[in-house]
Length: 438
Image (spheres, rainbow, N blue to C red):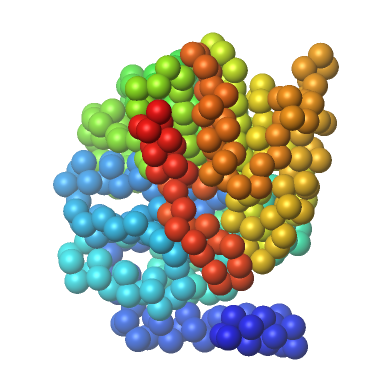
């Protein structure tokens, strides 16, 4: 009933009025909990992809320096040593829960609060009144245009996080939008890069990765910083995770953490749930579960795993309902290009018809197929509405040397099957149940 009333009001009220109500909620939440963030150094991480992983790497670096850290991300909430799963299906929480969590961190004596911060949250004032000590940009690519309408508007929302003169700003020099962010004032500005680093060599706050060696189970590279250079061997895989690592390194350097300490933390990293998560239950093929749900994110994952696949790459994925429809055929085309076998399936349809979403994704699959390796329906290209059946089909087809890549939900524990209706769900548990039962 509440959701129906909310949907009706959205139709009759102006956007300006709705945003005003969001702002009032943000102000009330801040007042109710007494602005708890003022007792901690708040680190805000924004970007299209890589936010959650970057937050976790930052957490590892700060915790490794014996700081007490709180963290709020898409997948989990942490206060010191206590961690709980984020089952809200929201990255940045509503302002009352956000301020409550920050209050708990403050009372627990946390030195830092790492907050994964989305463009929606910024536009809707969920983080109103929070003074960010450090702000981080991972990247900006195609996403959320259903809400923001244009890329320019999407970028402008991200820029707001950088506007209040933070102590430290961290910017991806390889991102096409980097110049917009460098124009915003900050006491210290760190830039990181893998490709466009020529001008960073002489910058006081330039951080670079060179001599990158990408392996199936780890990544090695030379880290070059204002504090010197050092060899890094991290269990995170993929070029995109080198970017996430560099962003986190910048945060550590901004907090004057010694380079050797940062190295120790990077090499002690644990795999992050639902992010390039390998599942091994004794099968003779690989299974990876990842959250990738944007064109850039999916492309990055494909490019990370493809070189190490000796057999076939079998992909299971789809697209989210009630979100940017323009990216659906793009996701399909990427699967058609990189995967040998494509299975398009259901993925958080919300109030949309799942079949229409699947068909929109599937429309792009043949377009991505390479000449001579066309995708043919029911041969190397399948549409299976039931996600569990789709995953089981992929596993049944897999042989020695193959890789089953399941994207879109990562470690999520729910599937949205209506405007405000959720059912229990876990890609990881389905794989585990099927493989352990074989």
